[in-house]
Length: 188
Figure 1 (cartoon, rainbow, N blue to C red):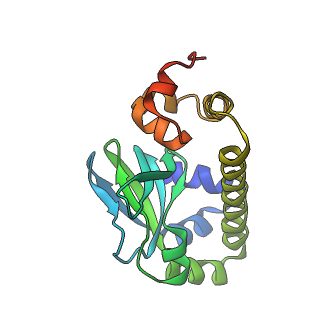
Figure 2: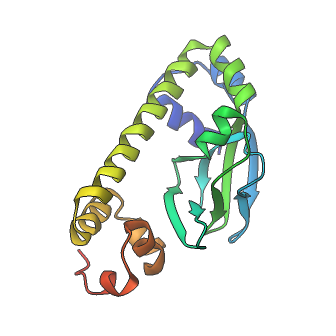
């Protein structure tokens, strides 16, 4: 599992064995079962999580009780409640496991220490944050400007493996459409 984290980091920066051992010492490991919460709204959310195995979703429940899916995260992806993580506040998002999950996590304090000591890791986290901002912008623009079928096509193109791993109701919720609308779309 350590090698999986190292591969993720080394897609962006190369680390010596000593540098990787030092970086790894700032992370912790956790395993969760399907349906278990990683983060619950209202609780502290002091960690950013790297998914080694499994599938999670982050979601917000509005005042009317409607669930809004913000993100899915599968192997090789990161997930947290960014507002709570960076501002050291309580979570506004929930994150739960859609499959049994294994992940590495890092606190904001350990991340800051690691980045101060190993500039390569600061660069790594900056690149990962930028990629996350770009994905979020793409998602917001898609919800604002694309028709349901276009959003579905984009989802299938970007995340083909999720089509088999997620119930259609969750895909529909993520796309902001009804389950019935999704069922009328051709599966590509």
